[in-house]
Length: 421
Image (cartoon, rainbow, N blue to C red; front, side, top):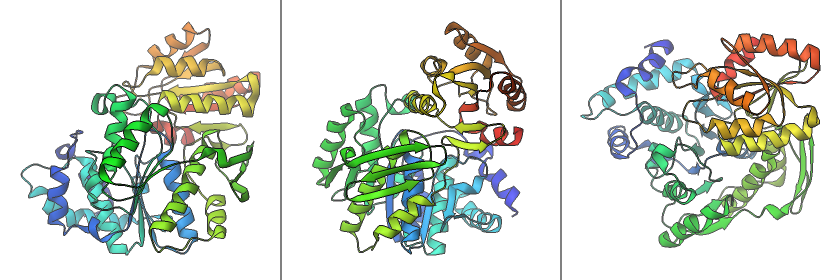
C-alpha cells in the first residue's frame, strides 16, 4: 500500500460520519493488542486552546530529553501532522505500513470504525512502535465518547476551557458541554482545568470529586508583565521571569499558564524530571500552525483558525492591540454549523473590508450569507470565488488602505491561503 492509497483508504466512504461511542474503538484496540495501555498519556480536552497547549507541552517534554508522541486534530496542511514523534511528522512509508496493518482488523469488525476511530488507532499503534516515553493526546470532539477516551489510566488530564461548539453532539449549555468534556477524568488521576468559563467549574470539579481525582485550577494571577510583539510574547509566571513564546495573540499567555501548571502537576505525579531550562527552551522553540500566525511580511498576511465565538473574540482583541483601530482587510470563511452572525458582529469592529469565501469543504457556509451579514454591520463585503481570488482582492485593498491582510475562520482555508500568498 502506498501513502496515497493509505490516505484514500482512511477517507473512504466506509469510515465516514461521526458516531460518538466507545464500542467500536474498544473492539479495534483489543484486536490490535491494546497499544494504548502501554503508553504514558497526558489527555487533553477543551473547546479552545487544546492544540496550542499540546504543542507547548510536547516541546517542553522533548527539550527535557524525553521521546514524545503528539496526537492532534484536525491537520492543517499534511495529514501526517496528526501523528508526530519527537516533533516530526511520521514518514509516508510508516503511515502506509500502519494503515495496511490495521486494515484487516478493522474490516473484520461487524460494525466498522469511523474515520476518526481508525485515525486514533493509527496514533496509538505508531506511538507504541516508536517507543514514545510520553504521549500528548488531544481529543477530537467532546471527551466522554471521544475515541481517544479509550485510555484507561492517563498520567493526568487537562480541560483547557469550555465554549459553545459541536452543540448538536455535546449539548446546548456550558454545563452540558462541560459534562461531556469531564468524561475524560479517570478515577484517582489528576485533572487540571483552565478555569473558563466559571459556569463549567462546578461541573468539572464535581466530577473529579465523584471519582476521587485530585482537582487543580490554573492560577492565572501568577501571569504578569506580559508584553506582546509581532515577533513573540514575553511574560513572567510566578518565580519564573522572562519566559518567551514565539506564538502571538492575547490567548497564548492563557494557554501557557495552563501548560506551566500542567508541567508542575506532571512532575509531582510521575518520575519525569523537567528542569526550568527545559521549560524555557520548550516554550521558546514551540511551533504551531494557524493560530495568529504571520505568513508573510510583504504584504503583511496573518492567519487565525478562530472557528467559534470565543476564538474570534480573542483574535479580535489581538488585532486591535497589534494593528490599532485601523483594522484589517479580512478574508473570512466558516463552516455552515458555526455561529457566524456573532462571529461577524465581533469581527466587523476591526474590519476595513471583508472578502468572503467558502472554505474547501462541503459543509462550508455560503459566502453570500456572510457578505450580507457584514454589510448589516456597515462593512463593505465582497463575495469571492475562492481563497486565491480573495487574496488577490485583499492585496489590492492593502495597496490602497495600507491595512494588513488577515484570514480568519476555518482551518480548512490554511493551505489555500499560504498557496495564494
